Image (cartoon, rainbow, N blue to C red; front, side, top):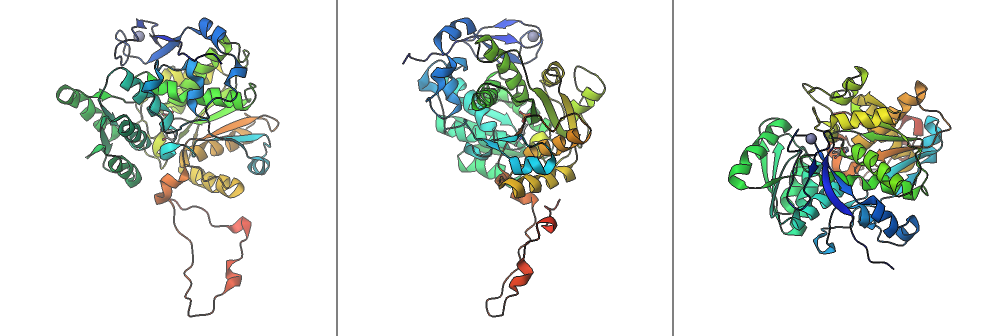
Length: 422
Ligand SMILES: *Cc1c(COP(=O)(O)O)cnc(C)c1O
Ligand SMILES: [Zn+2]
């Protein structure tokens, strides 16, 4: 077997194309402030690795070593993230009228959400560049992932979260030794505190798309879907969008795969899903704009979608446009109904963000934007287990000293209690 090397060469601005040196710490474009993309010597990579050589490699996202930015294996900080199941969900598919339905299930990943991919990559690359202290403004899952990988890398981790962040996210950070600050304000206020603290604390800010490598971790979802479908991409990919790193990363890696000859020029239609209470991308899409505006009063139970303005908005909109896809907003009621529906039909306890993709798919089937014969992949981006606070318990209490009415337990599938909104 040939020894593996990374073909990462440099960074390039996703908006103006300005080239940036890969050997030093970079954040965003020094000219225009937009996100930077990692670039690879794909011609050389094409000679070095074929699709067939991937077979039998490690069952993690690190199997795509040639297309990842970490240069030395010694710097990899991993808990075994990636290579998650692409689960066929025919019972759910038949129920909603699109039988060839699949769920890429990111609920089964260290730290319980796909933020693990991005932060494993960002922390590994930060380690390679000599960074010892990292900070992040986060409303939830990103903080948990950063704290875990930061702990494993032996780094100091600082997290700034809005006071109303879910308890699970605060606890998962503190338990692994991160320093958490609760901010009496919004995520934007937390972001400001991290930026202003850089002077005194000299920490590296790992905010979404404020550094180039979380995107490289997330792009591995696109590689995995392709490989798991035997290098034929589905007709439609439905993705819940907050900061957009996943959809942007997948759209980027499809081009890289094509240059390597791993796939052809065909692409899935990329559908970006948001919650009605925070839908800056969908609003921009409907208005035919290339960028979004700050979405005021952002609110939704799907915490990962609570991003009122994304630095990479123009890239999300571009992926939807160039792929012939679309952007869809769904309500919190539809989201919670869909959590129940996918969970009951398939035993897959989806997170609200993941269930939002099902709600969007049902709308698209209803208005003819997706055909019942198409192959569709939904992204469940985290485990429902991180969101138990959103659910009511319906269980009756049995008194062992009295006779129990077993008949009252009979399950009538149609009337099974729906998940309750808070
Ligand atoms: C952060 C998050 C999202 C949004 O992901 P982006 O790639 O930033 O758009 C979706 N689902 C969950 C569970 C998240 O934590
Ligand atoms: Zn630029």
